[in-house]
Length: 117
Image (cartoon, rainbow, N blue to C red):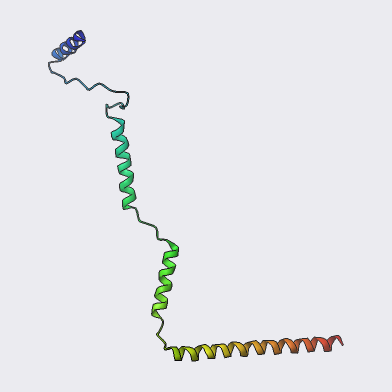
């Protein structure tokens, strides 16, 4: 070892500059002598930063729920008495339409019976 150190110093003296000896590379270091752990940490850190600044995609279900709540909030408030009247009129209208549809079906059946007979 002493001989190797002397040779290094002699070479350094010949160049006229004293060079600092490079750290010995371990098994877990790359070409530049950096530790692989440092590289792994920097990669993880860069990915973490990207994830933090990335735009978050909105959940469609949440957006639809929020829109539905906004629509319900914009509906005019109606008293229970008025709401009852509105429901009653709507029920009467549906019943009327159902009766008309039944009458039309009966008329069509009668006409088909006349045509066959």
